[in-house]
Image (spheres, rainbow, N blue to C red):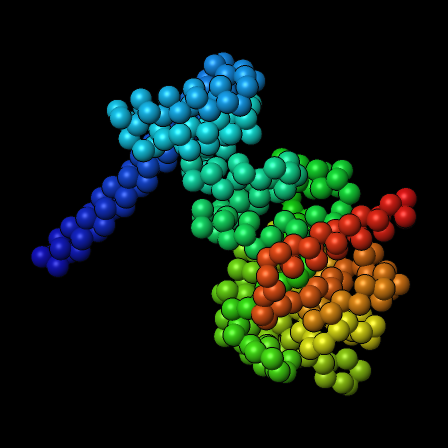
Length: 345
């Protein structure tokens, strides 16, 4: 009898603790939303109602004067720098209804990471992906610093396609493969140096599976390593097999040491054909293949017309180049892709 009462008391304590934690979390969210809306209102008032496109030197004097007075009474949160951030926030999100929907999901520090981005499509990409994958502020900053947008296939598409895909994600929560797959992938966390084999690469990925999935994207789920397929009495093995929750499809990852070769396409087509015939279940989409190699050979890829297939090719880096070199390379890749699209038209 005493034991039953003790268990009942423990259960009640657990339930009350849960209620307290939930309430605390709700208070934090409410305080954050109220504070962020206050910052937006202050920024709007200064930017559009007081300064109203005044000269830059006049604006600087006004903000400096406001900061000097507000900091004394309300602290460093109202410094000159933060007042300019508030103005930038109101300028970036002029529509109050849209902004109100965002503050339910983003903290003030999320907005501080987003507002410096000038390109509207790039900004929209980070906002929508952050919402879908529920990134923390730290993750958002890491994604921006790792040039995720420039590495994602969507950045190499026409502007109208980018807008449509992001709008589809925003309104219908539907994601396209171009928003999922990247090029290149950063595998520096594997700790591989100079010379290594495909087996070494695969073992290192499995050992660091959580970090590898973080680089792939949150919706990837690991299914198998070296999955055996028997075709015409011969054994074939898939390096890595994943499932993508939002795309609703199997994803085969084939790991290669060296540059892309035309023969890799045939291998992947065989794997995808097998999976489509024997493995996918009702409601799933056709499988996608991702070939990771250390050199893409773009003319091979163009002639093989891989852009019309479910096969993706991407480079990977086990040692990262400098950000400047990488950015230059990505911008060139985007320009080449857009030129090819123009030629097709």
